[in-house]
Image 1 (spheres, rainbow, N blue to C red):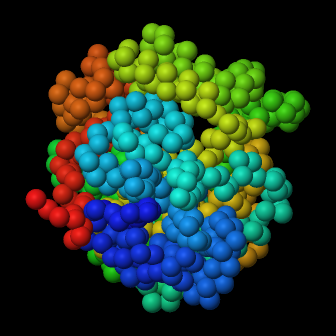
Image 2 (image 1 turned 60 degrees about the horizontal axis):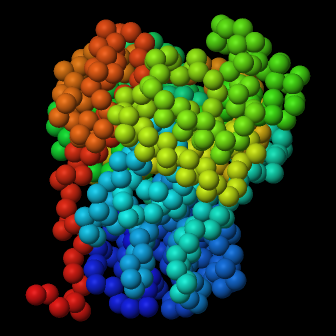
Amino acid sequence: MRWSTGWYGASRHDRLPRNRKPVPGLDTAWAVGWLTHQVRSVGSGPLALAVIGDCGADDQQLHQALTTVRTRGWAALTCWPGSYLTIARSGESLAVIGDLAGQYPVYWRTEGTGTWWATSAGALAALDGAPFDPTALAAHLALAQPDALGQRSLFRAVSRVPTGHLLLMTPGGATTVRYEPINYQPVSLPDAAPRVRAALSDAVDVRLDGTRAASADLAGLDSTTLACLAARRGPVTAVTFADARLRDDDLTYAIRTAAAVPQLTHHAVPGRDETVYYSGLDDLSSLPLTDAPNAYAVTAAIKRAVLETVTEHRSAAVHFTGAAGDAVLSAPSSYLSDLLRDRRHRRALAHAHGHARLRHISPLTVLRRARPASRTGLGGAWRCTATELHQAPREWVPQAERPVAWTPLLAAADWMSPEVRHQLAEALEAAADGLSEEPRHLAAWTDRQDLARVGADTSGLRELARTDYGMEVAAPFLDNEVIRACLAVPADQRGAPGRYKPLLAEAFAHTDVLPDFVLARATKGGFNALAYAGLTRHAAILARLLGPSSRLSAAGLITQPPVEHMLQRAAAGQPTAQGALHLAVSAEVWLRQLETTTAASWWEVADHVAVA
């Protein structure tokens, strides 16, 4: 696994990460698994700056940024194109800054003489064998919002830096500091369009230096945009997963797009019996180790089929994926709660009619679901959720039929033991009590949480591609500047029911980057058919994985009767809590992988420490 780490303290550290490479200019910072060109630095000693990852700043810009480091203008160091980790030292202050989407998360743990920081919580836990935190994992399963428990990580004794914050270490200790505003200054969709176009173009260009061969998914509107942007710079091997069970029009649009864009060479990836969800779970050693439960453990067979097709036709150094396009270019209908909160009743009613037509339900039903969340804030919502967790589990109904919520309680919460539910409730109550600042709008909160979740999962895809195919995965929609440009547009403009992803259409209209028929597209593919096919085909494996001997069951994170009932529904092709099952399976895989990871695989004793 690829990660970065460092030590801050008055005394010398007594351990070192294995397979490390020092970060130039920073005496006690190391990169593990990164290529030389992905680790760049300027300055040294009391004034130094390093970036790790895909950073669009050239050497001159990095040198000029030392002035910003000296004045501790940390936020300005996050505004270059690309996605990267920033480490900046100014005198006795050391700032470690991850990205806005959790691809470069930051964790820390303080010891008697200083602080270890890392982009891997598991690595810090391995310093002394700290176990996973069952309550934090319960939050992951039941809430699926990374910031719901604030600084609590999935490991005991390891703290996490919440989204939009940086880790600041001084002689007085380690603390987190917010560098990103909770709410962006709103920008209208037409005004934001040029900035979105520029940010996406820069994000793609950062990954293409003129020598790197590129490939890209060519499926929905998001991935097609990236493929066409990359094709401006050179040949692109474009691939479309074209399983007949999907019954969508991705392949039709992909063929037309490739015919219209000369630099795109298109290949269809036919579905096979094994290219369904949950394939390969009988051999967990075939899955890459990740720092947290990862959704791609469930869909690895599908992703491998796509990447194998790329390698068969071209040796690509970077592969573009449209991950997170939905999160930044559109918005779920939960923004209706914000319209009601702001007393914009006429607009709320008009949009409710639009969403009702799409779902074949009444506008009154849409508004009734949105109203409860309009009457409370984040802290109050967490207290309500805690009260619900103290009560008996609910009867299952599809999540879309439940009221809109700041932090929806997922079906997995109803599979947990009473003790775990109570512990999670107490943790949520404590988080609500400690909440010092709240977003005004539900959309601002959920947008950030969706991005953090997608970013963490995309790190798993990146590990799979790098480990098995020697290929980098680029997800430009997760870049800081792309996120900022898109989320500045109010959710009711991004998610208006009358148009499909209007922000992207506005950004690339009349530019010749995308064919007009692509911008006019109003359809989107889905993988439900392959999810149900996998649930049926691999029912026995899933029953064993989540059965009485499961690690989740041992920790009280699932109980057998409701899980068995849900698996039976799934195997019969009945409506089921797919998302909750995906989370549970990926968490079980992760817990089993933890058992094969030891402290020795991460750390070694430093030379200056005497060994008995």
